Amino acid sequence: MKMKLINWIQLMLLVALISLGVFAALHDSSKIEECSKEIKGLIVDKTKRKNRGYYIKYRYHVGKQEFYSSESLDSDIEVSMLNVGDSLSIYISCEDPAVSEHKPL
Image 1 (cartoon, helix red, strand yellow):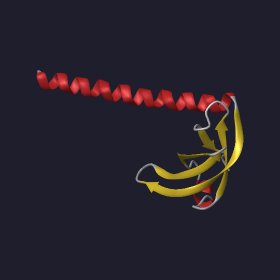
Image 2 (cartoon, rainbow, N blue to C red):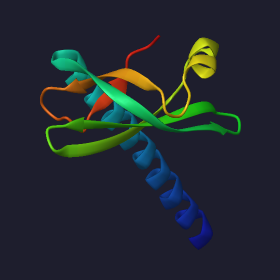
Image 3 (cartoon, rainbow, N blue to C red):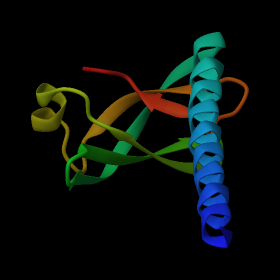
Image 4 (cartoon, helix red, strand yellow):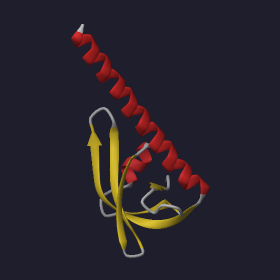
């Protein structure tokens, strides 16, 4: 009985964490949709994650602050065309410059 209670609590915590992650992603996306500006960033890493595809990590500057973000690459074109050291266009939120997404090719 005690083990079932622990498993139930673990399951609820997992569901809560997943829900929080989905909410945070949707909230960040809405910030960019409401008001954004386009700037240039630099790709600093490109990795392939098993069963998840390719991801890039990019760096950008707003004023004197430096930010990093990472995103998955959605198309084979992006995978073949975007490499470490390449410049790319990104959108940053007017409200929070730490929120960004790359402009699709």
